[in-house]
Length: 435
Image (cartoon, rainbow, N blue to C red):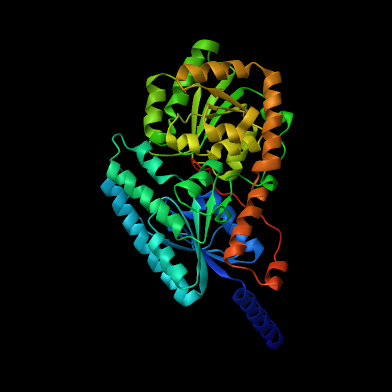
């Protein structure tokens, strides 16, 4: 017994020593719990694998997690978010509350747990005062640019106020100005960091969204067998325009009847009850199916058995410059995409996409109808989707760039970096809406 206790003590001391050698970094994401943010999950796992110790600050999820599922020791420090809704005042309250809790948790982590650098994921872009304090005390700060806050405000508001737009643009610039590094999700976001954010090119790194190649089995002919299936996977809010997919399904029934195909809508959001009511009112229950929010294995099974993926986002400054995470999820399974002709969507999907001019229900229905019967074109688009994913879009390519940015901010001790296992990724939820 004494020998075993001594061995356990040595192992505990060795573990504590290894943890002490690993630089401790924090990530703050405040628009949803970390267990639902696949990008942040992959970032945490990449940092762990490279030799960092990670703590995430985020809103509290239903499960009140204190440890990130699938990780080795990534901790979660969560806070309750009672403010959520629409309108400028509601958003202001939500952002102020999040700022206070992130500031509190970060202060505790810096003072008591030796955090040496932090990453903040927007929206919102209100954390630049914390960046100033961190930089002033010799600590690093990374701004992970998930969304364009000024454009997102315009997209979600019927009559945007110029003063609010200017304020958001100013906050965005300050968020970039006081960061050690800026991580952009695509080329358009990088250009905004260089121009609107006035960043030096060497401080801006593109890290795209998307699953790891190791998470995705190669599609087989059996995956697409059976009835033709059109899928939408993602968040269902007003700016996502999923109602256009439902209306396209209605038009499609007039074109090809109701047999041999279906539209599956997987996800959740504020507009889901409205969509369900629309399907009932229009008598589309036999061709439109809702699954609710799916976990990763269920998403994978759904997409592997699908024929086409639909991206119903219509043109706006926000959607034109953003990469939709669902599009990369579709392509990872060799799934052709039907979408409005948007700049970053075309840059992402290339010839794996079928593009419509405006995104009307009739345009979507016509494109879907033609593709469902064109097996040779579908086969070509599947091949392009898989090739683009494996060679460019897969997380393995993005993780390398992401870790390079972190190593410039917090260099790793050589012994620590060499002792870590290979990068891994464990998805746990449906993909987010956008970039």
